[in-house]
Image 1 (spheres, helix red, strand yellow):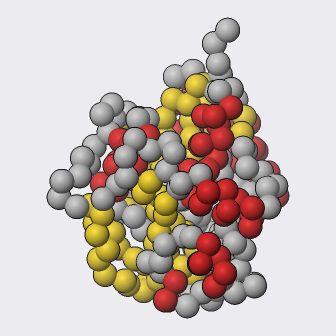
Image 2: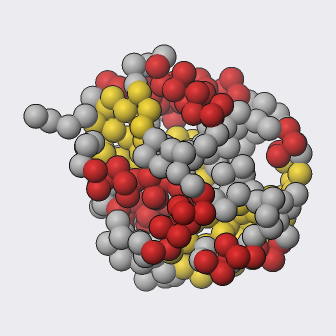
Length: 261
């Protein structure tokens, strides 16, 4: 009996990596590829600020086709939803019936995802749903995943946190008000090694920059409905650059979705 086909909603960060790990380990789904939203102006992963060549290197190490859904930088919620609906509809025609997410405990976000998926006949899979955040970080580290913080919300964390390794020392240093997994948008990460990677991704750290955003009814790379308190603030970003010897394209790229054109 064939397994149901699923697409992985991939941010490149720790939650999606751990969710993918558990989805693959379960053997319940045929994971056909990664779906990531990308800022079409800057060619970086939405909200995380990671260059697309690093995203491609992840897909290469995971041996999964990468599909980039390109969005304008100042995208409204209406445009975001429409683009996602188009992307999901294309995937549905390709036989995909489920989408996998790395959400942990945000009930409204899960309900939003399920509602949007149902409109095109898909269902959601949440492998790490309602797991304890502290336990998840310990599991992430114990499994051999490696990640670096690439974006922090300055309302929650000082700029010194951006660029740091995601390890147990970081966990000890996080303020008590910050969720250990950054589930409330306190920080975002880039995963560069782990048990589902064929080899580590080699990169260099570039500049640290500050960017500010104003609420516009848009969303981040996870499809979160905009939270004005979270968006009307500054974010610190650690730029990462692939080392010259890196392979920068997946072996079997899926290309852009039809809705990108």
